[in-house]
Length: 449
Image (tube, rainbow, N blue to C red; front, top):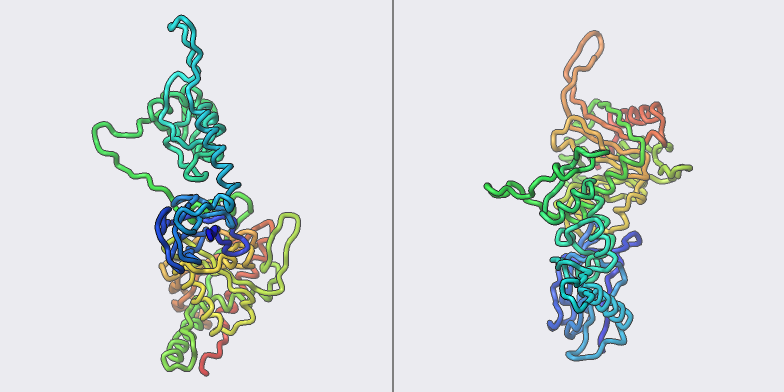
């Protein structure tokens, strides 16, 4: 009996997934547990296994498609088996759409006895793809958009209206004449034109290719994850009042504890290789408990105060930046925190992290450490709706008064706190940042057992 394979729902916050690779195509035989296709959310990748033996009777999407969760993805059954009852609604809608597209794409000509008076409704054929919705086609023609430049997000790569609108949002403003010339000649406008309000005029159009030399650049599509990160970063800066304070803390205590932790780990006295970042996170948690105003979400007309610290850690991966969250972090010892941080970071790099702990709403505060890269100062971007984020910088020697007129160069670790000024005042943010420094300089860890 034929069965339908649906797009799984990975986590409560995931609404759709991107197909990265189709392993078994239509007509191919599959065995139970064979990988049918791979897909990704905005942060993690997954594989879907065949639940039964059979043949792939139908595959509704192709690689690169964005598929809503719980949507029909494939049908597996016996060769030649009728599966229309299982996917009747899906097939009917697609068939109607194809018929509508075919009808819409036909040239309509009014004939008269005098051939010279032929009225052609569509004066010339275009190179538009076969699969384009009528509304998308009308909008593209109205805005003089070359359809071949647009990637479709509909079923089987069909271009739909939102694809054209997305293209128009990214295209610089142009005058009507410039639009027409750009479409017919394949030219691109400059980012800022010489027309009214910066609109590109016909004289501002630039040829997309160098007729004498080879093209000196290559346009590459960005990944779905990069799109999500870009949208999140832009939204964070656009929808909040962000300000950053910088301060440094005496790192001598931190460095001494790191030496002790390393020795204890090598002697198997402790079960975790506690790093400087682990200790900084441990100090941050202590500071957050003393400043509940920071351990919050700003919701516009209200603030959400959390009884527990759910700490987010920025993790650099090959696929992009991820921020997994350690829930109830204050309940952990420094050893437990270290192990948890390493576990979620490894899951992010392997691509099998739980999407639910990557949602910005899952965390109450985030730490981003660039000290290992030698960064001396930076401005981290808040993971909204959180009220603040801490940037940890590299350790540098700085002059310090040791008393009795004696000065010496002492290692200091840089701390950069970006906060949402709508949620926190400058004085509150400064006191919290100073508290982190105090916790670092006076950190007590039981790492000798």
